[in-house]
Image (cartoon, rainbow, N blue to C red; front, side, top):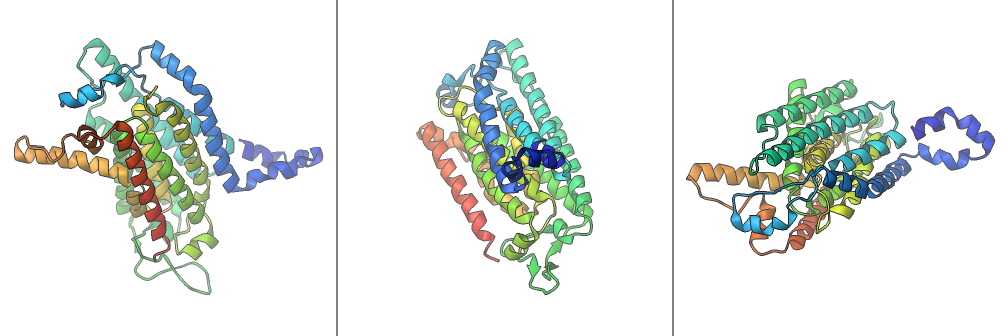
Amino acid sequence: MLYHLLQSGDAWLEQLGVYSLMQVLYQIEFRAFAAAIIAWLFVLLLGRPVINWLRARKIGDVPEFNREALNALMASKAATPTMGGVLIAGGIACSVLLLGDLTNRYIHMALLVLLWLSIVGGVDDWLKLTTAQRAPGSRDGFKPWEKLLFQLGIGFIAALFMWRLSGDNEAARSLVLPLQRTYMPHQEGLVLEPGVIVLNFWVFIGLIMLLVAGTSNAVNITDGLDGLAPGTMLIASLAVMLLCYIAGSPERAQYMLFPYVPGTSELMVVAGAMAGACLGFLWFNCQPASVYMGDTGSLSLGGLLAVIACAVRQEILLLIIGGVFFFELGSVVLQVGYFKLTGGKRIFRCAPIHHHFHLAGWQENKVVVRFWILGVMLAVGALVLLKLR
């Protein structure tokens, strides 16, 4: 909105003598970091009123696990308000609407993903909580296949967006592998390196659908300890913001031998808003948490992270940058699979794996901070791979 007001009123602003101050909005770097600040302020200022509103309506979580020892550890969290993801989604939407280029199709896609998954997560949270209030011990929300269907559905729509926006740009449909160059030096500019894998329509669509659904669920599973999910998402958001900075510029993309995808630089604003919203949410979610994000926040954050990474053609780096999330998801898959195959044996004390370490005697803060450290190192490692081509 502010970006378009500047474009439409530049002559008027020039007459007032303030145009030189406002033209900083043309700089994508400024808008991205300003979006982080606005989203942070949005969550910080509205956090306490929203938490009080949720508490007044008894929208609180009652965590229950199959391990009595874990139930004892988590007993203090009973009745803590959940659905705090409305703060995160609201902060992101407010920042993007204020500072994003609202004519950009990638911005449209990001806002659609945010709205879709926030609603799905919100309805799921509401069903779980209202069911638990009516029948203690029950937590029936969406069935797993129903939630997955919604996630795959928005993944399909986002993938169609990206395919249509790619036009005849093969780099925007390529699969970038570690240590592989996308472009080769050529006097005519951007020329694809021989051996670059260009995906066909169905592989492109299927890959993005799986990543959107998988990342959304992975972040949801990670949201189990105070501060764990928002802190790790903050790190991942800053990393993908840098990827957008490179992918949206032909000069920087060519220098880094990185796919150039026109228009994706605007996704820096979305990634910045995600980082700011998560930072603001940490103010209330650090131990002892005053509120949890619930599916409302975790599903939308995971989906946005995936679509941004896919838009800049960095699906492999997404697996590294979001390694903590996929580590958590993998622990659940391994635990459930091994349990069924062996008739009741377990690999971990409890899954997701953050509960394994919690039950092993690690203090909750120690688990969270160590996972943050792991997230930082994975993000740094992924960025190092940008130069190793």
